[in-house]
Image 1 (cartoon, rainbow, N blue to C red):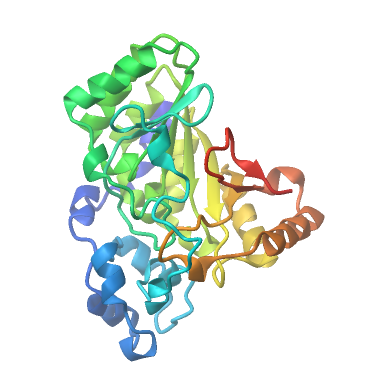
Image 2 (cartoon, rainbow, N blue to C red):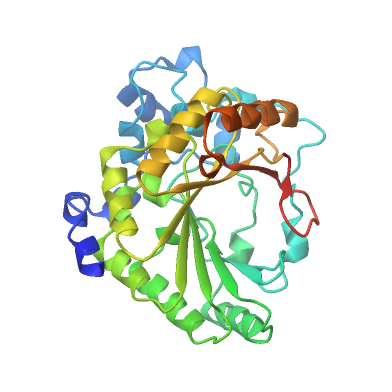
Length: 338
């Protein structure tokens, strides 16, 4: 099975993923030139960029529609003046993650699982990101810090699952990822390795035969939760990358964020669910946006989100309807809204 998976990748690997990652679009003028858009129609916020830079891989831009300011992919990454709106209920740490940070680089919020910030950076800056103000500089582990995190996990046999997050854990090198997985594999009570990543969607060239082999050869039950908000994000290269993962023993799930003006309509999410399932990815979570400073223009009310989910339930089988959830500070689990 693994050999079969490895044969799928070459058409995606024709470009070196690390070269793509080092050549991200960071200049709004370059982005608009590629998309043939007039900056005067939707001015960029320099203030927003100074706080959370523009960063988008070229393969993701290739999936955008030229000449369309309402493109659902563009709206997710464009630093608009709407980010300058400040509302009292919006904060830099809406989930109070600092309270669950017992060891540098580790969050222990939920029972039986911990989250490791495996990377201090992402391949893309999604403007709605709930960690856009997270202090990655203070939470980028050194080898000594990793040792402390591993000791923390070893000391608690109730921990059965490790979630690699970030940043984006697939933005680190194979060598770094392999080292971390092998260290975790030495802890006998760990059973599941979960990877939360937007990379398979925005930088499918990262899903190389070498990466697939690392994951496929692990003793863990490996789960990859991709992050896809709109079916337009799923290019041919994304399909090829996902197919390679599917042919291995990796369980594939998706989580989305419901975003105003982007995917907050039943028809859009219905198409997304069908597209994901055609790739053997199960819709898992649909999150309400967290109330992070600079993201209020993405906000969708819980009432509207519930209406959208109820509409999906009428049109789709249960396994294609994601669970609508909201994160609440201090809660022992995600809060299901319906």
